[in-house]
Image (cartoon, rainbow, N blue to C red):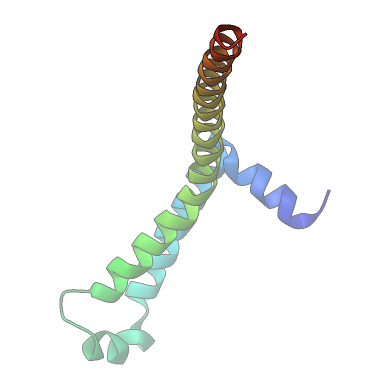
Length: 105
């Protein structure tokens, strides 16, 4: 199994998602508490928007496998609904065509 496939499989597990969220949070804390980054923090805003952006990015990375799986399920359900609607419309058209062909004889 390729490394990317292994990582994607591991991140879809609940424990993997929790570990990724924890690692992301720890990364943000380390970056925020690093004394060498104080000049960078004063350049941005005093509200800590860079820390917020890093935290949201870490949460998004942990959430992407879940979104992909839900997207697949939603696409499968919508595909089945669309196929059923198309089959119903085609069946109605064919019934009308059969009635019309019988009435013209």
